Image (cartoon, rainbow, N blue to C red):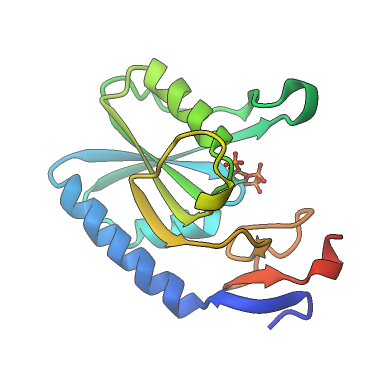
Length: 176
Ligand code: PRP
């Protein structure tokens, strides 16, 4: 375990097992269809790589990178890198590592729906329900988590810890 991690919440085996279940469910739900997976950079990368291994439907992948502002411009989401594919008439599944306030996904989902996709759903590895300030729910959730500072498996603090092969709680002294 990394010295800055206080406790492991989900091991690699637990993440893989749960992701396989999600992949099987998504494959059943989209049977016979083509699915466009849209990963939100950068946190979703390990989860997306894991999830797509378990999808048996026809899949295309794409990525977006967005940033959301706090303070004066709170709530505003700006696209830093847009996806490349035209999603009009297509089934889209947004892939996230974590939903916190819900602000990012609320705005991204709205943007993608305005592009006239046939459907737009959300899969997230982690759901921090207690922190939600905007009413948005994922269609597929890996794990509900408490309001703790989590890192690993794509999740960072100051761009660190993304490579850890588990989800852990960061020690307080590392971010306070
Ligand atoms: C994180 C995470 C979500 C968002 C969730 O991204 O990946 O996109 O924050 O927070 P919200 O529900 O309060 O909007 P971040 O902006 O840290 O970028 P990253 O994926 O590059 O770490």
